[in-house]
Length: 68
Image (tube, rainbow, N blue to C red; front, side):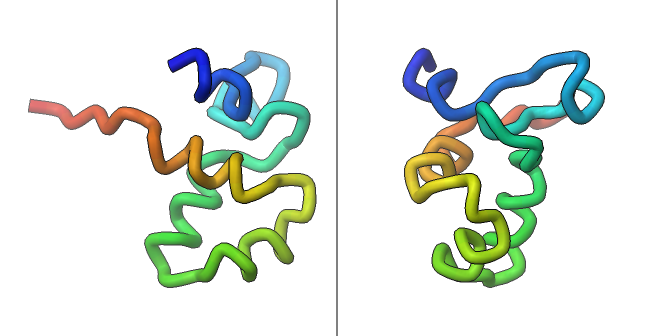
């Protein structure tokens, strides 16, 4: 998980504590939502030039929590 911490963080004073990509205000959910809607890596990187493919890969490795 420390590998994920290189790219993803949560800070109460940035985007209300939502998961963001370290050093940016790009929220992880935004990128995951774009991927789910069929956006390509290239389109995402064009839309948010402050992130890299490594940021996207880290977001895809986040554990999924499901409610019972």
